Amino acid sequence: METATGGLIGAALAVLAFFGVWLIFGNAMIGFGVGISLFAAGTMASAIGLVLPWILSRADIDPAFGSGPVATIIQDVLTILIYFAVMTMLLPVST
Image (tube, rainbow, N blue to C red):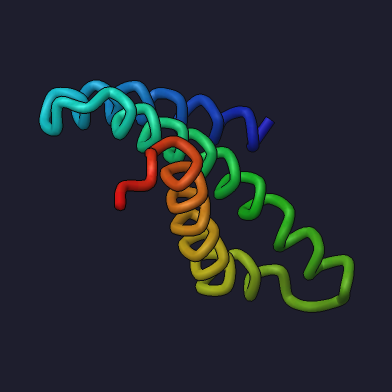
C-alpha cells in the first residue's frame, strides 16, 4: 500500500512535470524523461522508506536509524541515478 501511494504521488508529479517541462523547453521527450524519472523516484522512495527500517529491525538494529538520514541519502542517490539512466535511454547522443 505504501509503494502504491508513492506511485500515485509520483504519477501526479510526473504529469505536472511533463507538461511544465514541455511548455518551458518545448521538447516533449525531455518532459517525458523527467516525468518517468519522477514516477520511478516516487515509487522507489516509498519502497525504501518502508523496507529499510523493516530490514534494520530484522537485523536487531534500531529502525529509526534507517528511516532518517540513511534512507534519505539512499533515496537521493538512487533518484539521481534513475534520472540519468532514463535520460540516457531517451535522448539521442549528439556529437
